[in-house]
Image (cartoon, rainbow, N blue to C red):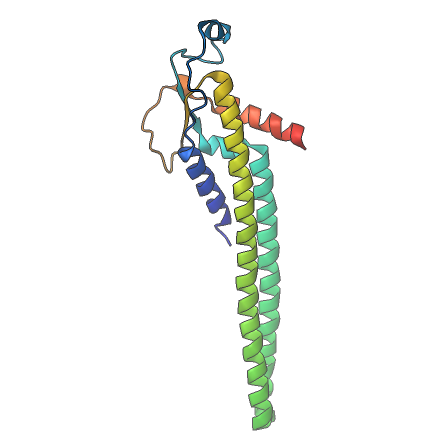
Length: 198
């Protein structure tokens, strides 16, 4: 459960890397090119731009909200599991202290009951982890769809043919001119779109 957000980050990064947009099959018309501001396209011939996925995830409000939500759920599940484990350990300790005064049948029955409780505790832990992972998968899908849909519209509006991503931890891009970095614009647009959808 501790690394559940690395899954979100990895999936988001993989989704962004795999996101190759072919927004338009035709080149923008000359009049449309002239209408685009140079601040919007720093290099008019640039049909490929990139986004820093680390910055995107750290600054995208939706991602920050779901990250906080899952951190809270994970902590609650860990605390609940810890409380159940502590109660079970107390029960085992109490049995061990009083075992000498119990009959053989009573010891056998208590040991069977404690073994069942231990299995139930392990099952609870697995089920809680699986439920959290399943919910996280659903949120990853929503996150991917939000970013992909936004980037499709963004690329089409700007006349980009491809949006790449890079991350310091997992990058296929070793160098790219900073004039092709559209991260800040994308983050701003994603956050505005998310804010208006609330």
